[in-house]
Image 1 (cartoon, rainbow, N blue to C red):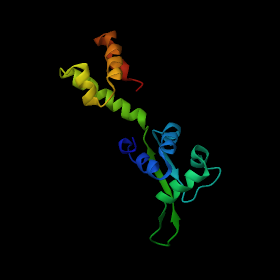
Image 2 (image 1 turned 45 degrees about the vertical axis):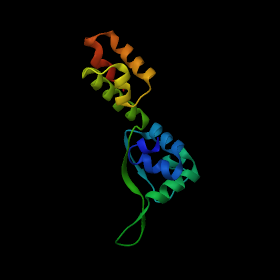
Image 3 (image 1 turned 90 degrees about the vertical axis):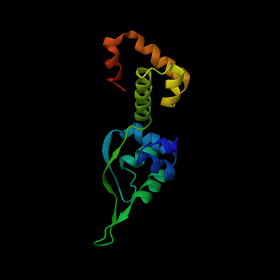
Image 4 (image 1 turned 60 degrees about the vertical axis):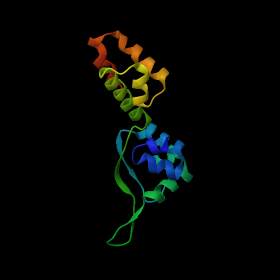
Amino acid sequence: MVDQLPYPLDEIADVAGIDAALAIADSVGGTRVSLPARARPDHWLTVCVGMDKAKLICDHFRTLSPDDDRERGVPAIVIPRGPATLMAKAKARFHDARQRGYSVREAARIAKVHEVTAWRWEKSLAVGETNRDQLFLFD
């Protein structure tokens, strides 16, 4: 799953574990946040993943200023929504494949989801063509 996570969640998972990356995506996904040069106990990152993992993440993203060799964190980095975003993209691939005439089983393979998930999505579309677009409002 790490290889399917978008940046920077993939790098966070590599240095601090998949659980830390998912916790961050769940907590602040879809927003722009700052990563400090060094973890502090009261920073949102430390509160979210704990001091040990926050330290690993800060160590990974920390840079040195070329002007004065001072440590710098990341002032603004966008954290994606993580697995929710991946599932929304898979759902879009599934519906696109179905519209192109693929069977539910074939569309599941194209979307890279379990066949049971594909059948659930197919069943949810049985509400009718007029409501189809509304199904994607909250993905």
